[in-house]
Length: 377
Image (cartoon, rainbow, N blue to C red; front, top):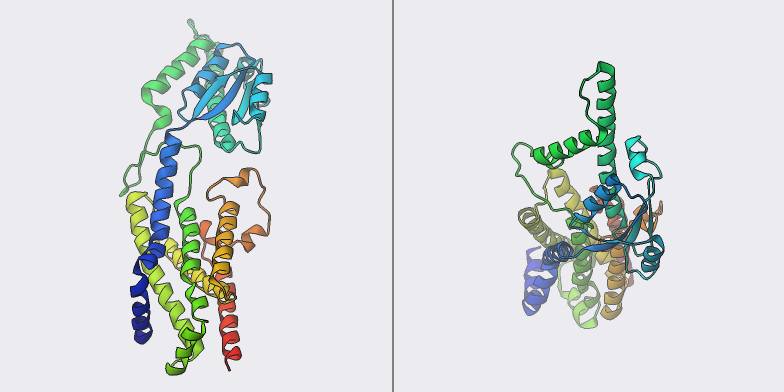
């Protein structure tokens, strides 16, 4: 193993910059992507259309609450104009506050008081819908509490009962004074984190997994280069079988990758407030093992590096799209039942050890190494 490490260091001395680039790409790429994406999102608003069919105080209060959100830019318009702008993708989505909204909320109804329109490009529709639904639930909760107080007034014959509007205004005032909906708490031994709401949240380790797959595939191009006649001639002079030589090289790359993975753990914990656990460390090690085995087995089936780079890049792009790492496609494309099995990143992204694909990749490695021994026998 020492001899292999020594010979590899001699080779790496000539391309130390490119090697460091690919080893550090998952860390630097993930941190830059998350930082830039969050900065852009904080400085931008999503345009939505609001159609007001209900001219009531409660309806206008809902409109004001939506407008106060820092995540959206509200345009009040007619339904016809809103749908026209939606078709031209000038609006992300359209929400209609139907006539009778106030009466429905005060009577405890929650169905068919709002409707919405979206297109296949309405990326922010789901989080915006959740914001509006939470605001409506807040209003229905106040109305339910007010109706309960009115019933208590009638039951106990209160001499100066409050009206429904007075009770609701009082609950709003108490909510603002006591900050009831923004109470922060922390567990013992943890720090309080103030996280601003965002429309799209990117998972740090999902982005890291995409970059790690890319770097692993590109760094395992040595498998193809080792097939050249000038390089393979040295196998005659080494005291290792070809099978043992390749397997020890895989272990060497695995250990070096693992060193940078632990570095990623430290960086993301400090800079991106990611949590660490023993379970996740095991998940990370199993994922890295799978990446090394899979990268070697894929590279062993190629003879030209250019074609290998192209296929590797295409594979990474397809997986990045299917996992929703960059664009949240799951709200438009339903997840197929067998997609999780075919995706080598799924187990890691789900927080589980990569057992199935590690076993499959290990079998491919044994097949490729056995094929090499037979072809050179």
